[in-house]
Length: 313
Image (cartoon, rainbow, N blue to C red; front, top):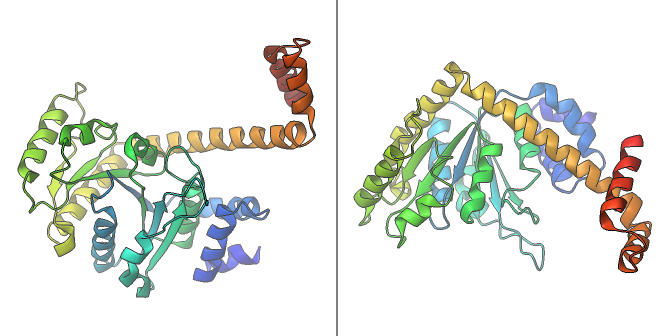
């Protein structure tokens, strides 16, 4: 396909069109991904998550600059919440990283969650692959930061960085929300604010009480992202973790699990489309509902017969 050829040859327009096709589920999206897949698996994928207001976008901006100074190319996917009413997304992260758009070595794309319960767009994984095939060295996936759903980031990332800030009221509650288990590196942003030392101490205590003795002990790096303080040290911690998981086989294991998850999601989506096209749109569902309502049949028998029908096909 021409669009694939152009993307592999470095066309930013082709990359944009590819991600648009992925987001909107255009017919050609699957064929594009089939051709791109052999060219993936090379980039370092960094997940950035944390509660709202933690300064994730500013942190992403500064980290991207640091990696660019190291001569690495950067891709950024900023996942914004989609309105359940209008379907629109704020897409403000792209505005906050506006100065990076002038850098040819950086590609930024905002994506709406489009109803994904996990807060992370189902299409994010394919967008990461497109950036990977395009040749980006480092790919950031920044989440919306909406409570416990942040754990979904681990499905798309090699390394997960959790950004926290002091003075959020109940710091421990913010830490407990499923985040402690997924953080490979912790960054305390706005470290010049009151409570930064207290938050660091609480984090250390919770990591010590984590129960499992892990070989990798997540480091905690204080940062003032708005002023660029602590960014280089944070990059060093991120690179250290990436080197660790490569050397110990953890990276291969994580990517294996990621592939497994993606395969299951693709299967579930395909089955869902089959049900929609052959049962819902044809009116068969309404007939089944009437049978159930009149007790002429039961939902368990109907589901079993539909599964048998699907398996035969």
